[in-house]
Length: 239
Ligand SMILES: *C/C=C(C)/C=C/C=C(C)/C=C/C1=C(C)CCCC1(C)C
Image (tube, rainbow, N blue to C red; front, side):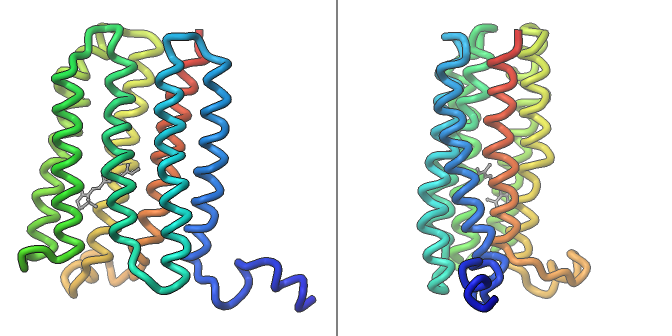
């Protein structure tokens, strides 16, 4: 029985729940990457690039999860890996919006606007977590949050929304689904941030709940990165 348990790292006492989510996050991202890559052969030509981008998003995440898992198990900080991952994958998620709306007239301008806002959101978030310039995490978090709202505004009410409307059909419903991921799925991250950079104020705001930041980020990544890819896959195989 002892031996049996020791091959199940989850049950071994030195592997925390957070370590476990890094481990399973790595496996899930890797599996999703293989799935999205192989789906490239199943879909019509016009969707191949979108599927490739889906595979790149989970592939880049898999690589970073591999390193983050090791770092977490050594008791090291994962912040830098985390943000390098996001600074590559979040702009690729903007590319997904652009690619599905391109046939109905999406411009590079729209793409760069989304990429610019997400870069601002992530750089300021990193500054907050790294304690840059002695400014409060709350202040950096606020700037980051404003950039996040500007992204939500653009996809729900801006140019992207009207293009999706004019495309209609499956493209419009895929766009709406991606929007929901951004509005609800991405909202997981500021919660993780508040928990991670918590002082007394945020702890009481969270009702004294002390969840770990990495755990929340890992759940967010699995939902959003794999979810985005599945929405695109669904669109690509639909008639
Ligand atoms: C695959 C990774 C994704 C989709 C990461 C998304 C990250 C965010 C939406 C982060 C947002 C943040 C705020 C809105 C405020 C606090 C700082 C951040 C960077 C955690």
